[in-house]
Length: 321
Image (cartoon, rainbow, N blue to C red):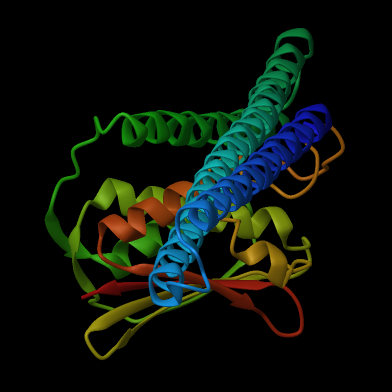
């Protein structure tokens, strides 16, 4: 990127210098033409005997000189603007491709890690069951862990599949009327079984909505997964759902480190994650919030993030009831 930027700047400077040189040469040539025309005029018309004709002809020459100057400056400025616009388009396109390449590289690294972690955990639990004679309680614990890791794998695969379908415009959303309160409660119960004593909920009943139930369930799953990931184990994740005029407001409040103001505008971008994948400690693929944002916008809603008190973030989804 640095090499491209340096070459890009040098080439652009060379082109600008060439345009300026070309402009100076044209102006010099125009001045020479004016001087030759003025000499010719003096040889044809005597300025003392026929001052009127001489002044009239000289005025025409001055006008032509001014028109040529304006034409050369206008052409040079036009060329310069076109070149600057082209240089800006090329640079932004190249920069976008570089950033996308980095994001995709981070995505591949994170997906590899996300896939290997639950697979390794399930393999270890199953090998333990195979090699050791355990009591029923230990067996149940290991099986529960395998189920938990398989759920993680299922969520990851769903996100990847859904992202691919959205990008390819292959997913056809359905439309049905259902109770969003029941859906949120079911999702929270599912996560509470995987992460006991981690959630607090305040859900207003009978919040009817029309939309794609599968898509909204995935969006809520992503928000809860994100909140659990960043909230310390001794602090709860709070989920609230209530009506506000003609809208339904769903909030997921975590108590993590929070999101810097400079990052809030980027967190819904595809593959976006803060920091470098090779040194980052938190898990994730950078798809969860991107897909959640897509789902909310497809339901004609909006999603925002704001600071929680005393720490953490609040993700708020506003959907038309």
